[in-house]
Image 1 (cartoon, rainbow, N blue to C red):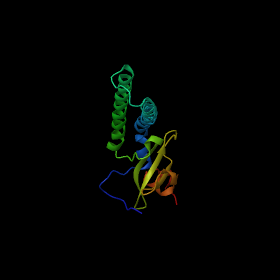
Image 2 (tube, rainbow, N blue to C red):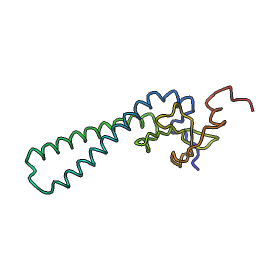
Image 3 (spheres, rainbow, N blue to C red):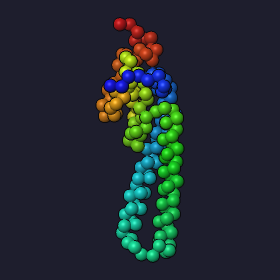
Image 4 (cartoon, rainbow, N blue to C red):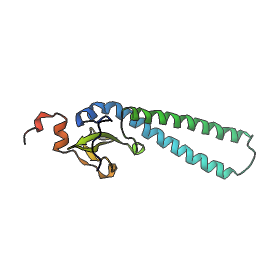
Length: 154
């Protein structure tokens, strides 16, 4: 397991949840836009293959090229949204599926606080070297380091 690094930003449950309104807006845009880009790419691939090697100077070819250019612009917007998450030092590896990881530390070990689009708040974590499929509910060590005094008695 990875140990905590002091070079990168580490979130607590509290700081992750404070960042969540912005993250939620970005992730919603990414999920919708990535679906659009993917579906358009599949349709274009189907149309181009079904078309064969006919003339490339007709109106149909121009329309296909126009759709491709519009899809490339959407892909560029998608990259900008993902870059926004990266600037917040978040892991967006599974963002197309609505998952975002906030780097954190739990008992000296690097972990990820895991949020999924639709979750009201950050309520899960997993080891930093695993993906969101291995997430489990936040526990006392993570809650304590967020500074929530109501959980300090042990």
